Image (cartoon, rainbow, N blue to C red; front, side, top):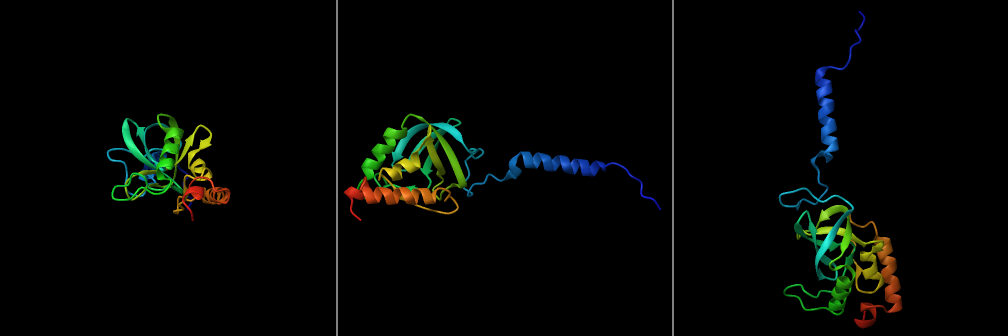
Length: 179
């Protein structure tokens, strides 16, 4: 018995169309850590946004689609200067002032890692001001130490090297705060 050659069935075409729609829409996975953005989608990679406020040395507030979002810089940690219930740490105010001079009131580009939000609901991002990599500038100047948390560890080797150089040169907190 010979098999008749015929085109794809209507069901196969419908299934293919559904798969294309799902793939083009990102499959429903926002790539985040579950915190999500209330009432909307997660921002996409490489967005340029205005800085509304500088919270401290490693956290800013930006406007995304008219909504304020806290952004925590990936891979770096500055001494505390505004954390409720915590003392102001050595070089914390200087780190906050440096970050403010860099980005306050300016447009920055946010690039996101695999984990989009931290446990506090803040966006996690690599921050750029033009060609200047703000996260790296903080470490290079001795305003921040490295803070590597997988899976957001793409620039960990760079940050480690910059921290070592800043420490060896006694820049920033390395010269002011001791070991």
